[in-house]
Length: 85
Image 1: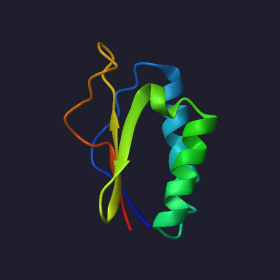
Image 2: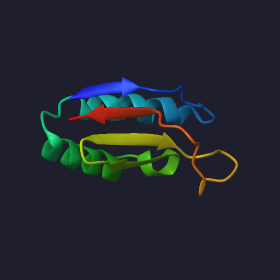
Image 3: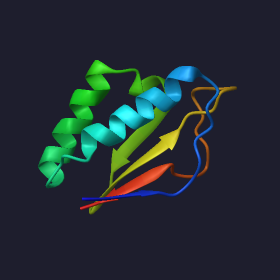
């Protein structure tokens, strides 16, 4: 797995940094796509990841973007990170 940060994170809540660092630490142990999917689902269930971020899987990668502070239904037009597998 190769985790690449592509953009800065807007830290408008003290918990955002904690959630993001915890998430990255969680997914770094993934060794294939199946494990990554399981780890993402597990972390999302146990944390407030969905409150601050949106994410998904492409055919060969996982991406994470941040929700906007003014309207959590909207997302910034860039990815925070990408994980290639």
